[in-house]
Image (cartoon, rainbow, N blue to C red; front, side, top):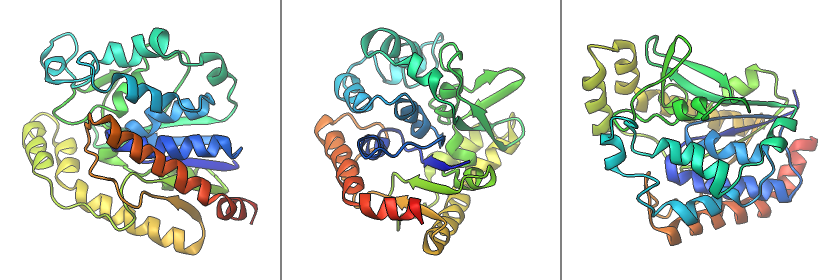
Length: 284
């Protein structure tokens, strides 16, 4: 395996990663192994299909639309998710902002989504296939606790991949990637603190899915351990990390288009500035 691209989630903060991926496309840097969690890999499929600017345009056009997201969709018994799933994973890629399914099919590498198996409490890594009607694997990796119902795929029941493995760089290395670019959606120095929402979610799921509840309760501890290991690997030169200098106050479900576009521009600019260093890493 040659070059791996690892994409952290972070919902709308992942617009930073979209800028990074578009810069990579412009620089001619194409990974043959792409893995991510949550919105990371959901936006990552447009990098795989080579559609520069598609993710930026999607958020610019639709993020303020009530058809795109909102609590009414979570309360809809046919949807049960904060995002309007059929609109996001059907209407947009099929009609409003066409996804290049042919280019995606022509990709000869691997595209994987980290998901959390809520029955076992383990991370799993599912292929994001072109023939996955409705993008069920992407729906699963984005299924935030409390804001989404879990997504069933085969015999498994899955939720947000970021709960079990927020930054799946160890999977990329284990799968044999010789070089790995890791794109974060938080500053390098960011470390998680205990979150009230995670505690609430852990209590909500404790009786029915105890293994998943324990993952939620301890998520900050595992995230911080992962971040420390990543920093060590970066120091050793094993991986190349691209991270925002400042997330500009962009929230998980940010609707302010100007802030989103500024964070996108930061991702693009930072990556282009680092092109020489990136190529040196890739060719070393």
